[in-house]
Image 1: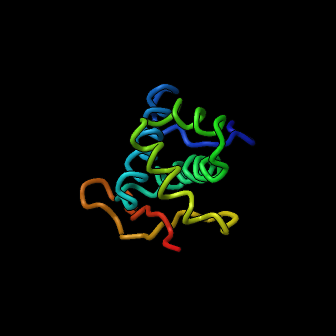
Image 2: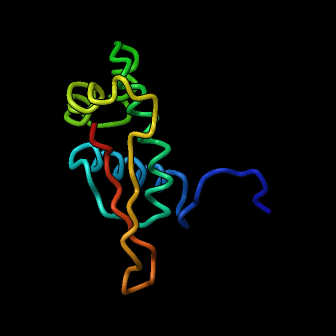
Length: 117
């Protein structure tokens, strides 16, 4: 039983799951809008919101933490462009919009995007 165990497994091992979430966060920060499944978006939302909150600080330690997790291009964009937009906002930086089910496997598809200020 999975009582009180948080997080989705996606049928993957830990390193593959971590890489998937990193990739989703990376692409969301670069494109500011991606199309994915609802389960992946909900799981990535947790990570993305924490990363934006870290980027809002803008100090050296948070920059290094972000650099250990994301590529330098994405870290630069996150700190210089994305985080200042949410300076006054306390949370809720992302939005999930449902699109309907995918034809192939009936997975619920969504648009996962950053909220505009």
